[in-house]
Length: 146
Image 1 (tube, one colour):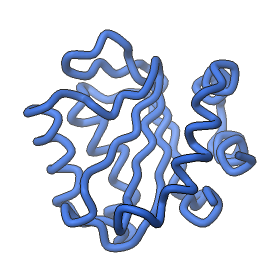
Image 2 (image 1 turned 90 degrees about the vertical axis):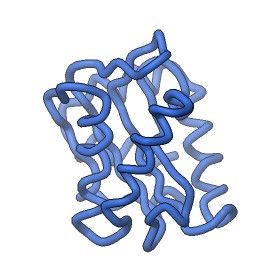
Image 3 (image 1 turned 180 degrees about the vertical axis):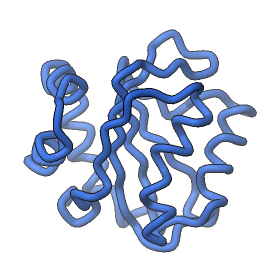
């Protein structure tokens, strides 16, 4: 369940990031600050992106930033960061405004959450609604309602 992995304090709305690397740092910061991931986790996402591209850009406006559990996950958790200005990622034509950061402890415990996220992200009208929200409370509620 998303409600088990997403805390309201891990939902943020940010004006902009100077580049995609800074966007990854911003979108993971709440999880680092709370001890869900180590500083190595965002560094690994950035390094992997430089090597393999932004494999985690799922569709226009949405990215699911993640790395492997052994790259610095302490405890499973999600974070949502909505950027007012779109972010360009390497080798992607679609820009991103919503970065969902996934910290998974293992290969299986987060699969239910991914299924819920897939359902939400398969609905273009819900994505549009989310990227145009003006409050973290509304964004949180949209995600936890599944």
